[in-house]
Amino acid sequence: MSKIGVLGAGVMGRGVAQNFAQSGYDVVLIDLENRILEQAKEEIYNNIRFQTFFHNQKVTEEPEIILSRINFATDYELLKDATFIIENVTEKMDIKEKVYKRIDEVCLDECIFLANTSCVSVTQIASFTTRPEQVIGTHFMNPVPLKTAVEVIRGYHTAEETIKMTEELLSNIGKEIILVNDYPGFVSNRISHLFMNEAAFVVQDQVATPEEVDDIFKKCYSHKMGPLETADLIGLDTVVHSLNILYESYQDSKYRCCPLLLKMVSAGLYGRKSGKGFYTYVE
Image 1 (cartoon, one colour):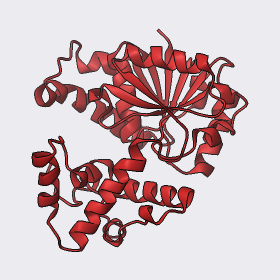
Image 2 (spheres, rainbow, N blue to C red):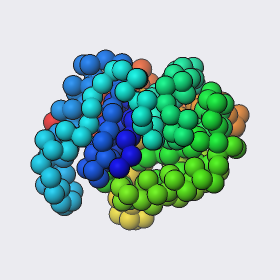
Image 3 (tube, rainbow, N blue to C red):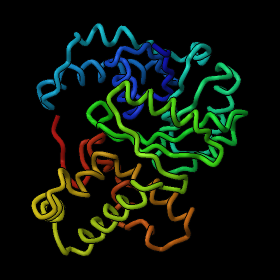
Image 4 (cartoon, rainbow, N blue to C red):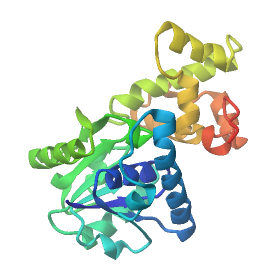
């Protein structure tokens, strides 16, 4: 099988690495700090163990075997023979530019770069490389191993062969692609973030509690999660950052961030990852 490079050992990078390792791929998971990589290793191990108990998904191999396929490292040189790179670093263009210029030098000429992004321009990301035709957007959803589809984004220069190879790769880990074109926020964030932002306004205006807002979406519309539960899962800081990108990109007031969201983020209430957001989470 192809060797997969995964950049960024945060929530999304861990999920991507786990998903590929569970599907039999050798993975190199790169981050800047060994501390983060150790946390990633522990979380992936626990996620595999609990996958059967909480999500009714059968795991056919022991966690140790799956983890043995992941090389947790800080050295970009280990990516030199990877066939695909999946980038999951923070949604800031100055950081992404440095990362893509680095991997463009290190990686094989035929290596394809998958940008795991929810908001930023795939075409702009591709401009940081000498291979824009081999750059494609892949917006994985959290938790990655449990999702059956990926929003895939065609940049201006993305080649048909890149799309075909990406579709084959994702099919091998049990995922369907939904191919869309490149505009900020694509489909998912342009729509979902309006829901989450307006839900926050409803709470701010004391129209309803977070529980009542989410219950309407779950019990009346049969959504699995309400917009505020979803925001807590994504991370309220990430939601605010994405809303700011959408506002800057379209200059449309509909993406103006709810003051309550800004206040919560300033207070360190990020959702599940901080233990408190619209809801309180007990481990």
